[in-house]
Image (cartoon, rainbow over all chains, first blue to last red; front, side, top):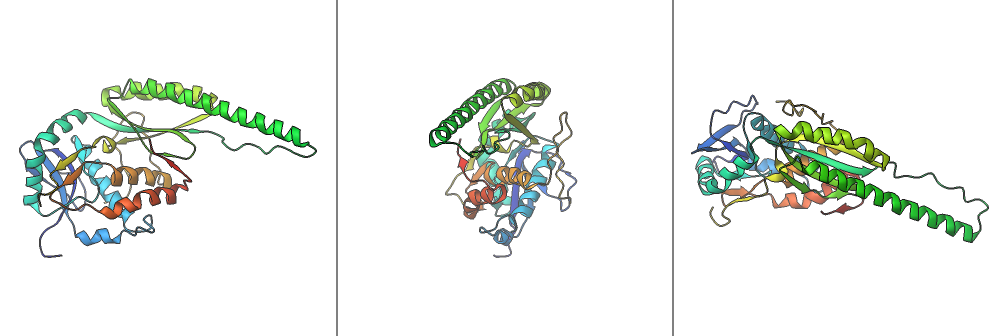
Length: 243
Length: 68
């Protein structure tokens, strides 16, 4: 790399004072009503990421730093989080990005202002079943038992899926936007909700109310958050061929 | 600088434990979400796309991912 300055960009936010209480301190490059929060970086640090073992490479450290800055800004102002690894070629490039993205980013920021993201995951509880004692069973008896077990498991899954559907219907009433996330095996639903802060009490009361009912359907709920609106910053800014 | 995550104060605060699953939650949002910048973003980290699936498989022991 040359001697030029490279900037790691974290969020687009409102232009204004920027003391986020972090060390090293990121700073804000402003343009009109918008600002982009950046810190100086050597692009080579991204080479510490080991694709064969990302958990033990530099990815975790870099991603935590990214999340730390995004959260720090988010405590003070609405944010449009930028994708991890966004590196700009200096302050002029940051200003150009803001200028080009202005009409896109400003309304987007207004839409998510006052909102926080919450994750709700529903998974089948107690998926493992005690093994049956098959001693002395005939072949026919074994097949009958096996069929009964499969039928029971299918009914349980249907019941759980219906309960999760009711949960989502109840929760989305209090959310401005929702987004389904990729699900791991055994997970019935993994949903991100963008919730206005004046709806958060109702949103969580609904979760509390339904937790017992879902438990009876064999579903366990896990809630994470509050998150900056990472999942809902799903836009593309700038132009591809303008470097 | 602290490695601890300190979400903004709020009702129904949910503590994010430093578990591998919590780490996946962070990485999934930080690495795979957020606005994409074209043009002046000189590094878009194409390699991260390769990390994407492997990471979650590795940390969660997931034996299958279902896309929404």
